[in-house]
Amino acid sequence: MRIILLGPPGAGKGTQARILMDERGLVQLSTGDMLRAAVASGSDVGKKADTVMKAGGLVSDDIVIGVVEERLGQPDITNGVIFDGFPRTTAQAEALDKLLAEKGEDLDAVISIEVDDNAMVDRVAGRYTCAKCGEGYHDAEKKPAVDGVCDKCGSTEFKRRKDDNAETVRARLEEYHRETAPLIAYYGGKGKLRQVAGMGSINDVTSEIRQVLDAVG
Ligand code: AMP
Image (cartoon, rainbow, N blue to C red; front, side, top):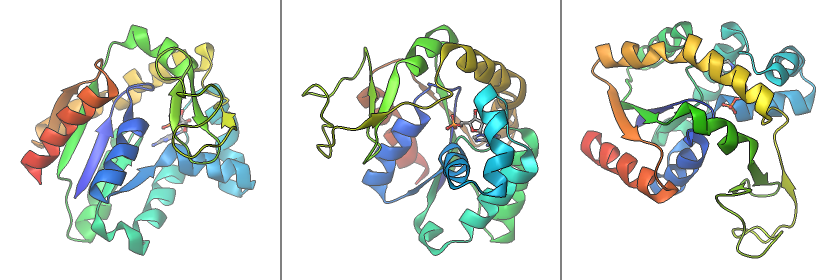
């Protein structure tokens, strides 16, 4: 199964992808995570991506498509994949169509998580993750049951993304509307688009996505 989660920063793509990965044995392909790993490693790709990411811009299509192409060639992908944060431009969507067609594969569904943009700055600016297992938390919406201890793995170390501050989130939202929102019509035209309401609880959104997956799977 090959699924794309589409939505602005803060829509819950990463949170939902992690749940589905555990539930359905799919691989989460997050270009944001891959680019952050490249930045941390100090590779050429990382050096090129770093400044753009800090400013909330989009890393060039060539770089991102190259990273995705390499990842899709790895053996663990055969069970299926959830694209999280990719594609973000029409050129990336066209490149993905081509990469999948070359393997005789196709997308099963593109799930657009519909949210209220005005709420996204607070959502993103308040979020943080466990430094060890990656479980997501939020200052107001989802604190650990025991203060300072990860519910999932017991670690006491947490981290926040550098680009999760109000100013950068606004820039990322602008990029979303300019470059990524047109993909809703792109996939609508191909009959792939499914819309789910994204302002409910994490569980509510997961239930809606499950219904979509059960219908297409
Ligand atoms: P994310 O973790 O998906 O919010 O991505 C964090 C940042 O990485 C974005 O603000 C972009 O700078 C960069 N990035 C991630 N995915 C892409 C992509 N598909 N195309 C271009 N830039 C990306």
